Image 1 (spheres, rainbow, N blue to C red):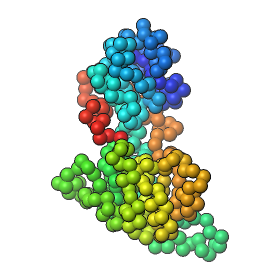
Image 2 (image 1 turned 45 degrees about the vertical axis):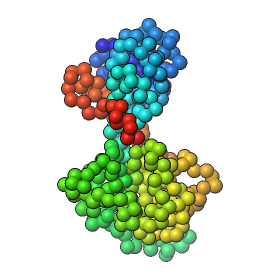
Image 3 (image 1 turned 90 degrees about the vertical axis):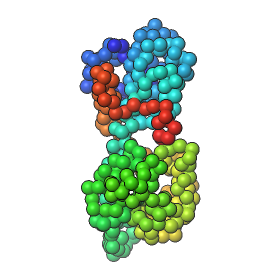
Image 4 (image 1 turned 30 degrees about the vertical axis):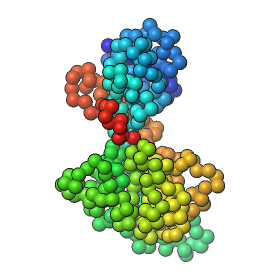
Length: 331
């Protein structure tokens, strides 16, 4: 069975470490130095015509349905060691090529990052980080923490990442509030989760974390009214997308109640403009989009895709296939 890499060679080497490349070469007829790109598909037509499996990651080429059917006539599957496939998948699916994504592997670091932030937020860790000129003022920011027992946490979205966050929250004794467009009230009750509106979550919860799918319907879905309705000492965490938040409304909410906290791993634009109030608000803490897979964490995505390729080859149960129907709602 012939396979190849597709995309950017530097990025492929980063995501597919030596031990994975070695396993791929041992399992499939794969030339490690041969990489298909958007520009060389036609010139490499002789090699491309026999390829059955493509392994890729970020910077996957965007080919048309006609190009796929003409130059990759024997292609059966694309294994994408990264998250969203929205930007390239449709022509493959229309051509009868199956698409697999390591979306769950890419979501695990985000869930871990979020869970850590929730734990720290309830200890008033971030408020304690605020620099103060007088030492005697500093300790007051550690007073009256919520703590990580019997607190209320709101989760926006229960997709790949939101569901992983919820699984970790269940290791604590806390009340989980969820906004979901897929889960039923009966399902939520069985899981011990409060299914409710976003408005109720912002009003009632001590910590709110955003994991909504990124699409046209979720642009600025987190409104000024919601943000300004937060408890005076609540924390808002965003590892989703900056465009989903009314940033002017967020700044106002943070100005109104200085004991509130915003933890932003994403903004719009990214990073914010130098004139953005987000840089100057002492209760806003920003990180440069580090929640997702970084460093050796990206290897997990390659592991997932290699194992999924084995499952497909051996007619075993599959876990990470993306269908045309899924593209309508997934990020």
